[in-house]
Amino acid sequence: MKARVFFIMTLLLPSVNVKASGAKEASPEAHGSAPSKDEHSTAKPATSQDGHGGKAGEHGDAKAGPPPSKTDHYVHRWLAFPTVTALNLGRERAEEIKPVPGRVTILVFLASWCVPCQQQIREFKKIEDKYRDQYTDFVYIFAHDTESDARGFSKVYQLGSNAMLASASVLEAFHQPELPSFYVSDRYKWLVMRRLNTQKKDLDELGQFLSLHTAL
Image (cartoon, rainbow, N blue to C red; front, top):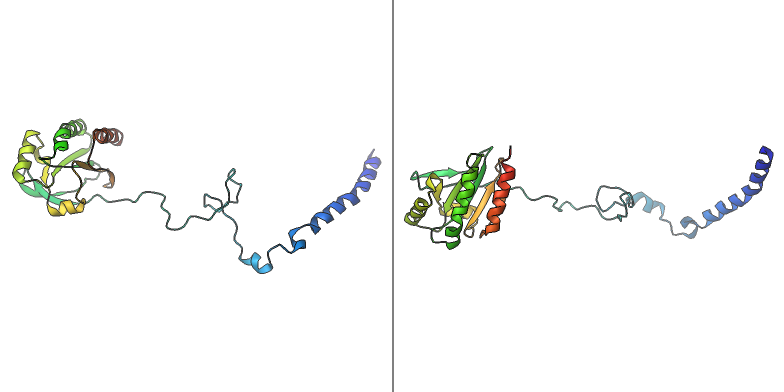
């Protein structure tokens, strides 16, 4: 039996060698289409679309593509929450407004003459009352308002020592926000949410954010 197998392999061996020889002759080098030696020295390996240097086809059907440039942005730009000084209407003195580590800070920009502010202030107060004891601070900043009108509005809606009168520097720091608007700082003093010209859905989103962010 072994002798018969050996005999058959002996007959097949020349044809195998012929095929291998033919494949070699049909290679790119034989037709002059292969890169030159210099081209080989400077050629760079193809990278996959994910930009991690893998070969094309290693991650499913992904095709080779250029690596990401240094100017590509993969995450949002982190912004520190501004620190400003404004007049505290309840305490009648200038105070610094800045987030406190470990606490969420919400700055609400409004005005006594602003109709949407009048319509939404009760909802803001409801959210404030709900999260008052859960590491959350609300600050109401009156923009483009007179001190007397701001005091009257603050008294009606019981804003207390959380009511501030914005100065020009405060409005400049927050880029003259539309009214009403709110800015949220997380527990690490980063600006994590901003809503301008707020609507009911924005207040609902604020409540959802605080529900998650203040969870213990």
